[in-house]
Amino acid sequence: MKSAYLSIFTIVLVLHSGILLISSPGQMNFASARYTPADTQTQANANECNTGTNCAINSPQTQGDGSASSPTNLQISGLRDEQRQEPQVPPIVTVVIVTKIVECPEGFSLVCPRSEDFTLRVVSENLVPVIFQGDSRTGTFVQLSTGFFSVEEVGRPPDPPGLRFAQSVGSGDCQGAITRDQDPRPLQCTIRNQYERTGPMTSPTDYP
Image 1: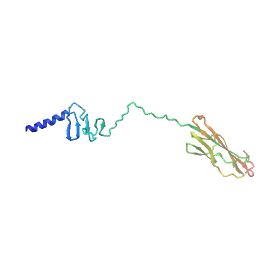
Image 2: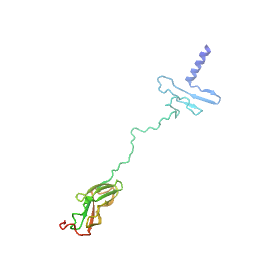
Image 3: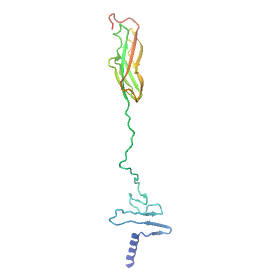
């Protein structure tokens, strides 16, 4: 019985003193731990194993001897770090007013096509094309963004009796480019359609 007590005492003494443990010739393991209840660090401070493992650490969240036994995030940014963002540049927005005018010879006012009989389109580099009917009174307001644009006629009615379509002339800001230093005032585009006479007027009293 005395030999058993002596062996247990010797093992306990060795564990508390941190004496080197020889497991086999040529192989040496070293481990130390704290068991004081008041000490919050329950894992080893020094741990070296010739097998390349962290032999004295068994917690998946414990770090020892400069190495971590679990994939712990070791890069912590300061709480006051500010994320740098590029300033948002507002897009340039302007308006083009498209006016449609139809001109016919004298005596053909009753059969002369109306402005709303024509279909127009504004094509812009950064916007979806806008299609609309012509307007000779207030014009049509179309929003534009930065980039190239153009105003064009894409549809017109059949030639009326005694008249034929001659030409379509655009004047003002019917094409161009919107830039960052664009004048904020609205652009003005006028598309003028001209008809010429091919026969007699439809009525003796048909005058403008």
